[in-house]
Image 1 (spheres, rainbow, N blue to C red):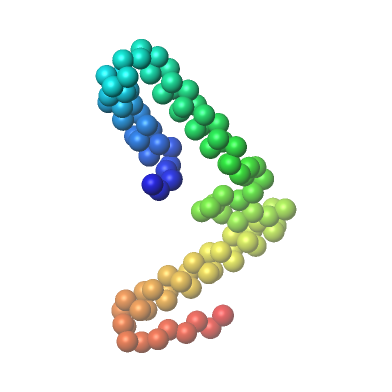
Image 2: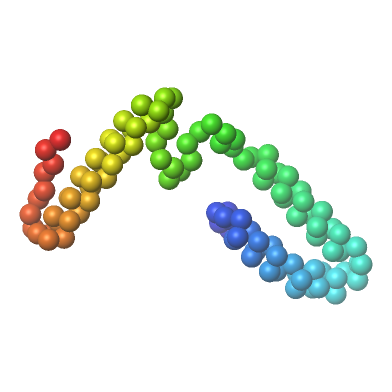
Length: 107
């Protein structure tokens, strides 16, 4: 089974299946404590999952912009990132307009 990649997948997986799963377990075992056991198991899964999470404080997150120590360094990083994005966009545009033409950037 693949791991959940977002909290919404976990909510739909566990929240959406809880009532039928607990009802089936309750019917099969006739133990009225089944809902409590189910919640305890979910709590243990949560604690174990939290144990394996990596701290991201002070680190750039995937998809975030460049980070710099100073404002000037951050400006240079953003400018370089924009230049690179512009080059990639031009290469894509050229490829779309002229599919057989090979575009070489002059950096």
